[in-house]
Length: 151
Image (cartoon, rainbow, N blue to C red; front, side):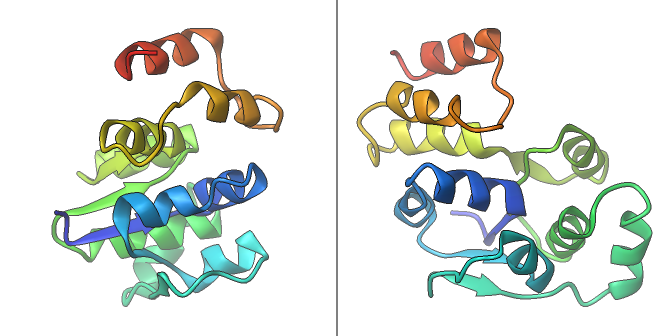
């Protein structure tokens, strides 16, 4: 088990929007996010989400030159943990996190892990709900995900 699971805003918003927010708790138990992410999320958060801000605010400010405040705060916090997993969807922010040596996944990776771990029976119905939102999901990526989970 990883030391910490840290989430950026997009995963929280998307799973909340499609009524699948509890997948995070089922899969990880507790996740961590920052006050900036909570502000961007805009809704009350459940007790299983802990709010911790990065200690190094200067480093976060430097990251904000490249990515938005929520992403910068989540990345800055992840840098402060040994062996954490950062849930982040934005391609520019993902590239930055990888460049910094962070372990990352996205919302779709969370769904794959949840299916493999037996927390959800099928991914396809959830992907269908996601396609009804403004989240970008190509047919090719959908096919890869469904193949990975045997659907």
